[in-house]
Amino acid sequence: MKLTKFEHACLILEVADERLIIDPGVFTMPLGDFGEVVAVVVTHEHGDHWTAEQLQRIIERNPDVVIYGPAGVAAAAGEVPVTVVKDGDVIEAGAFTLKFFGEKHAVIHESIPVIDNVGVLVNDELFYGGDALVVPPVEVSTLAAPVGAPWLKIGDAMDYVVAVKPKRAFPVHEMVLSAAGKGMGNDRLTWAAEQGGGSYFVLEPGESLDL
Image 1 (cartoon, rainbow, N blue to C red):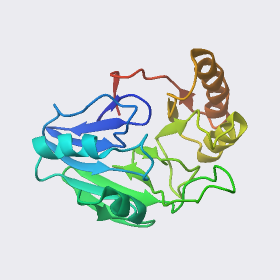
Image 2 (image 1 turned 120 degrees about the vertical axis):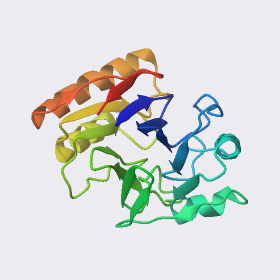
Image 3 (image 1 turned 90 degrees about the vertical axis):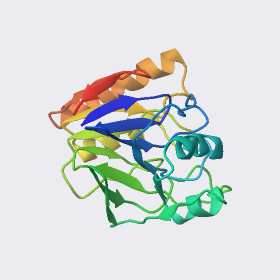
Image 4 (image 1 turned 180 degrees about the horizontal axis):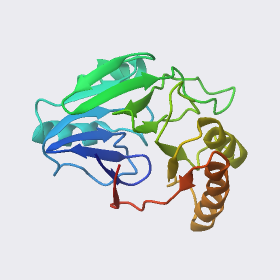
């Protein structure tokens, strides 16, 4: 399975000729030129994780694509069809097995409503929790670890990686950080990954890795 990291929180996974897209949001460059997309996962309704324009571009090129997300995404998406998933669901989408964990977004502030959020484990290999520090009750080989967010402090991110104990981890959700902030966060999460015997690496937008 090939993983390609795009801006912020967007990931594209490929098996043979099939593609899965996760969280194509406003900070991600337009993705309209990708064919053979069998599914899209949107972890929650915030605009940095999806936009109607991004989804419409994908649908135009891939009319049979199925979009998965929690109930909050389905409500926010309006006329864009979303298949609702929740904690504990297992979905087969082409070459991809999707296991969903978690229910709610991390708390940003007591004045801001807590929305729906699901994390996804892809082919028992890659776990991405969206905007929540969900520790799945399974072994995680590769973790997409959030490194910067309004709801996140670096100590919490470190504790999350330590708790998950992935074999390897890489940063996502970093567009809100300066270059200095990214460097600091990566140094801290390198330490956290090593506590469980894992490794930490950085993928820049457009870079790929075979999982």
